[in-house]
Image (tube, rainbow, N blue to C red; front, top):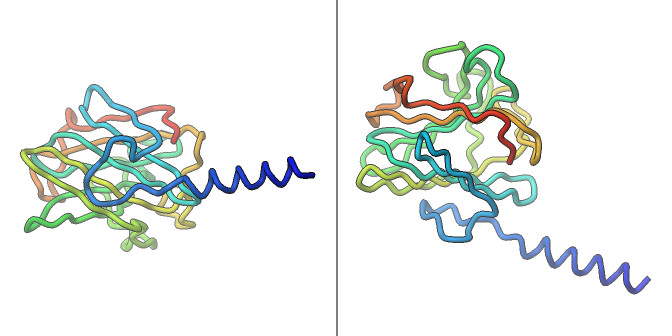
Length: 184
């Protein structure tokens, strides 16, 4: 009985020690539990799952906006993708939660498609063409415009960036990538 109680106390202590990354636009060494560098795009992803929340960071170079998206499966190009786009306007970060209605073209804000902006917190630094973006969202938002993130379950991750800060500026085909079988 004592071992069981001690084991539960150790487990509870370990859970209590799992700290959420600070969403401040600065990615500190060891701040995130995991990372992955995508060589072709030069974008590095960092992430931690704390409770029911995904903390995600992107680090990469771009003259314009930078974005990430999720698809549970790739069936019709980008259709159905849950996408997040980040750009600077007047020195301040603009963070958009978007949904890909059509198979190609620009995504639409979640609010236009029956959802809401599910970004809990976002911050970024952008200097000399180098992005450090941090944001958080619930693993399961319950919205049809958002993909449920299940740690360990594979999905498609979309990475993209553009030559301009204008969110209406489409990326070139050479500025987008699909990561197949990615799992948080």
